[in-house]
Image (tube, rainbow, N blue to C red; front, side, top):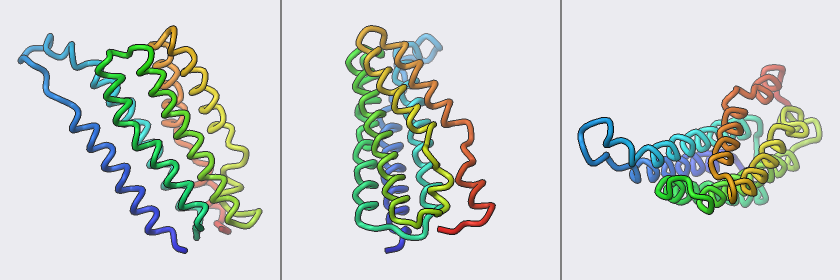
Length: 195
């Protein structure tokens, strides 16, 4: 099976999720800077979620670039990831509307944790479908960055119940970890893909 259809579908879903989040943004009531006050939490949660969706889109692109074929297990692993990503607009809106209350911030973290697990499962399903020395297996390795993200998400969910803003700080740290370009796959591909 070729990977083109899976890539196109995934790209479309992520684009729709970003569009849904943008539609949830409403102009402030008023025409001065003070009018921005009530919408700042919503805007901040939007920016954070936009960054996470962009990170997933970029990394998904890299995963697909490193492989030549997919199978049924990969298709379901990809749908698993898209399911959790599809909940991001909901928890984003809830977190912003609640002004970063404990339960919505924890729910946001649960969705990020589940999406992180789903991404890990997808990468392992792709690796399993390729030879032992495949480009993706070499590039991903043990995925320390991915596992560290999962641990940080789990900590943030627990911390959110008492200190929701600290959890938001942890989410930002994870986003920054992934914003720093991860050139593992590009480096291995440049050396000569064997997938």
